[in-house]
Image (cartoon, rainbow, N blue to C red; front, side, top):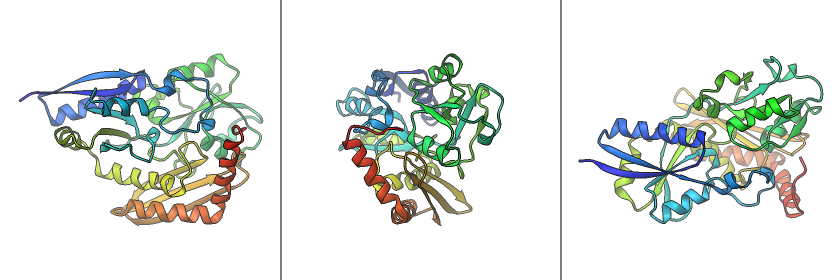
Length: 317
């Protein structure tokens, strides 16, 4: 018996490519399933001028999709999991987390380069991520950073057309668009910590839609869900928001899980790291432990200062 579902996705090449990946996975499990795509323009797609670190609200790229879901205009939505707020909206649930590929960041440079210490002194790097800026300033305080917004291809093009020496992007986006050849090198995620859940796709549904939830759950990846649960729990436990200089990366070590995370100030002068291992069946407990260690080490003071700066009119990175 055939069934037709509607999926909501952000408008844009990468978002649609990610959605088509999810559709292919669902059809592999349910060959008779028909899926229509509903493209949506998010607030983040409309506002290309606001610097990400000065946003006071979460859901900049996801809230419009959630509204469409709740209104019954779509049956499920596909998100880059790192963009989805940690606080679930009432009536919605993440019914599946797809298998994660390439959680790390990568650097694209105008000149051949294979490591961050090979960059010349004072070069300009394009990024709108405080997480990336803080980690790089910690090891290379001489570098200059330029806010850069736009879709993946737009940012790659800005490297060629604007006064930039390099840009930093999530590797997963380049891979999904077939632009991996543009990369100069990838960072080791155990050393240069990604955003929590970076590289993973989350499929969101209405909590009370049992039929759709059952269909979508057929592509849930248990290992990817556990890894992203641990990473996102760091955000939840620190209450830091999704744009603070915070990163988390979990990986399997046999049947156990190791979680690494950091909190830093914007200048990268103070950067606190924490690491712990534990049963992969208890990812959130692991996230709580690492978050507590970060806050105790000095992360609480940093987050309080960031909040005061936002209340005072914005962060100067």
